[in-house]
Amino acid sequence: MSTHAPQAAQAVTLPTTLDEAVAALAAMPAAVPVAGGTDLMAAVNSGQLRPTGLVGLGRISEIRGWQYQDGHALLGAGLTHARMGRPDFAALIPALAAAARAAGPPQIRNAGTLGGNIASAAPTGDALPVLAALEATLVIAGPGGARRDIPVSHLLAGMDMLRGGELIGFVRVPLLHAPQVFLKATGRTGPGRAVASVALVLDPARRGVRCAVGAIAPMPLRPLEAEQWVARLIDWDNGRAVVPEALTAFGEYVAAACIPDATPGVDGSVPELPPAVLHLRRTVAALARRALGRALS
Image (cartoon, rainbow, N blue to C red; front, side, top):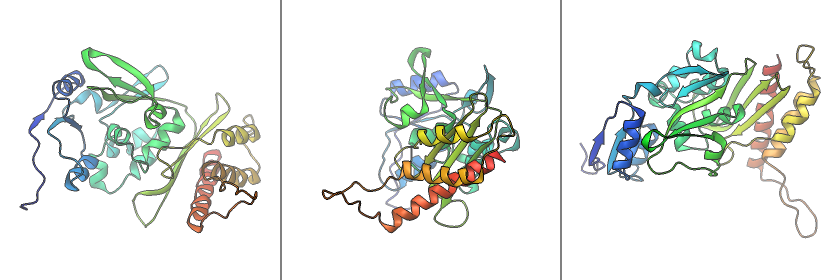
């Protein structure tokens, strides 16, 4: 025991349904919802957060699984990384399963949840670029049984925020039945925080490629022009073939879109990017090139 231990929360509520959790938050506006607690406890232990109340979400069974719905998978926000990393889930949404397996050591994967990854919105969240590339939608639970849908990208960009008493209940993901890849680079060996990550999914029905780059900005970045450019080069009717040079060009295109050159000076000269930024750009280019190559193979 330490005399400097964080002060305990004043009240803890353990609802068993999503609507009960929303009601508890409405009754205690200053309370903090908690599922796995991997980010919350880090904030408490560092002194950044002193919650006056907690609403525990661990007993809400309806958000701990998934179901099929009109060509989509409706994922409960309480799904843990460990659960999403299993083979049956990987067969459903391969890129999200790969991101879940890369989320950290076993203790983090066993506790951390999909909804927590989204709500904390940390730039290094491994699930975020995958959800952006899949163009996933959040189902938000509100007071009185209300439900509303918002694109996950809108929440991450601050275009549509959670309102008082609202919770992320589910994540609706389209089932593309096509190759998906998630890759990330870390600053050390083994599972760790991403320096850069790339999620890439193919959409054969629309003959499209969707790519999102994570960890290098406050939210995942979508290089839309690079996506459209490479999609036109793929022979969708002949085994999704593409010339090898296109893979390298795509990687460079994605990296330049996400990490552009410095702004020209008054004299028109373009200053050199710092070595660390150039290294990050090369890392993004390599990840994007490999992701597309694996998806097409």
